[in-house]
Length: 283
Image 1 (spheres, rainbow, N blue to C red):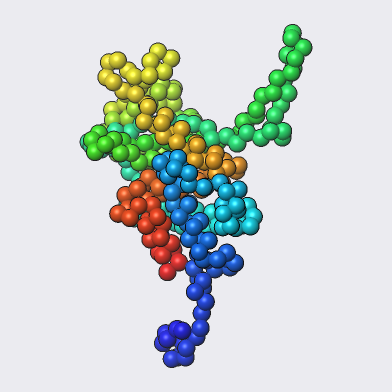
Image 2 (image 1 turned 180 degrees about the vertical axis):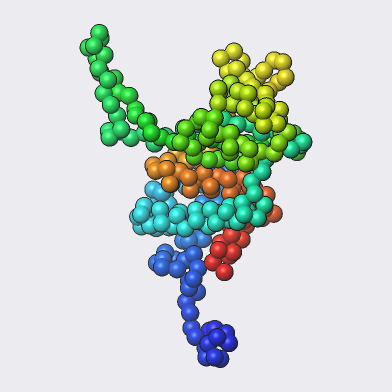
């Protein structure tokens, strides 16, 4: 019963789902709670290794929803909550990396969705008389990652992940200038797009020649932090089939950032942060 003055002291009855994340959903609230719990821990490797059932087929077997379409709609609502929280963070504080206590590792990677039939081209080997299948990836965007790593405090890290058309200097350098503080130690491979440009912008740029070594013997610079991060991020995105479209991939990259920037730093963990952000979005 609502007693707001706008109703002129007339009581009005509203459903508990009204203007909430559960509105227009016929899924029981208890099943919603199970889904939110599972989703909040989907990026926690320890929870996943303990047998947390995160696949859609497992959730349907557990009775959370009757179809994958319903589960996809539920997941979309949760992603929208995480994306809204990250947008508020960017407006309020920005996403800035680096400084005297933090170095930044940068790299580019593909999160391609490999189709079985439509995106394959048969290449004939004339000499051998045999056919080979080449998975097409033309036109796919790159994911550019900037990972801020604390020099102490257990090497905690925060990523900034952006989809870019090309990994050229014109596309990458403006993103670095926007997100990385001037004077920061920046580590990368020897991709030509970085050569000379970062030092010119006031960064202490260290490079690693991966054709010779993985750790530079002169200064100890390496890119292992972001290589490990790529492996974890890709496993999570591929497990949730989040790379089928560029829009869906961008949503999942935002959720990864939400997990690293907000959820891991909340006093009640990722589940507490998710409930907090739901309450803010649907207040």
